Image (spheres, rainbow, N blue to C red):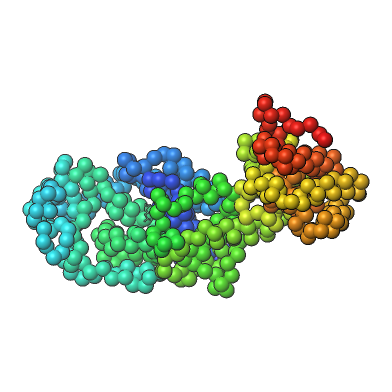
Length: 502
Ligand code: GLU
Ligand code: ZN
């Protein structure tokens, strides 16, 4: 018989426990990621628990938002999703045990009564009025946890070290509402105990409630029962160093997906919000994140959520992809609904040829259609500002004329087109880059785009000449003061037909 290798004493179990009370936001995604990376790095289990006990604030479509964002980011749970709302029985039996053990007492004080009694007290909060009144449990009475009068609770936090909370100022906090519904602080701890959670990794906004959780944990499991390891992650702040706000800041994960951020780039960026690679390297793929992620390397200073940096990283990741992978990633932006061209005009082969050039020039997948739309639209979308520059450019007409003449006869491939255009530039006494501008606007409608000569080569002689000639005519009418000539091509109103060819 062969000895089985010893399994690790306990493989770590972590949980991501979002409350579905709004759009899934970047702070939650960062918390999910740190849990997921920790689990993957340590061969642990990543549990997903939806904390949906607050029926008034939860919505089912927000649960779906959480699930689809996690799926998009590739953070599949090993267990769950569990629903906290389905664990009411477990919460109730924990309440019964705490009651039987004398850890709780019933309180029927109204908020007003408490306020009137405690106004001016040096220690704010509930004053323990009902602690020794011996009230029975029942409708209309909350249950409070009788906190010890002295001592400290120490939260041993991997990120912040030991954080001490003195018990004297801590009020006897409510664990069950007057309706009989257990509160978050209790449900959260009961679930962590039942799910054998070993590491609680979450946002630092939850640090203040952690000592209450520890008191409950000990009351339920015994004074010396091992506690989970805590890691409270630094908060995310905006440019003004203010806490990221769902109202002011662009925080919904969905919106990043819709703009064309890659999951790997988004994960890479989120990982850097509070953590860094030991080497300081910032461009990292998922296996590298998993290999190097250690909770000990998480720091506690607030992390600036910098969209510009995220976008830059996204561009870097786009450029790292193989062309086929890039084309596949672009596909949702190129197909029927999303794309600006009629589906039958899209030519996959043309896009594939342009793809390596496009890949160098975009930071977001959402920018791809505008880079190539001139191939697939009958008439290019004319950027008004770009066209106004052409109109204001005294030698644009001359450039267009010379190019039309030269392009009519030259060999049709990028290097030749480059050469021929350089000659055109010389002929009109301009730099090549300057001479390219009106040509680019005439053919693509825009000032920026993929390299011009590759684009022309692919677009073909006939179509290139047709667009150059159309632009030349528009330019002539603009010069003649025809206001209709400044509009987009292909959209003349019924009363203003395209001017006839000269
Ligand atoms: N459900 C809590 C929240 O979304 C998180 C609880 C936890 O991670 O312990 O704020
Ligand atoms: Zn009371």
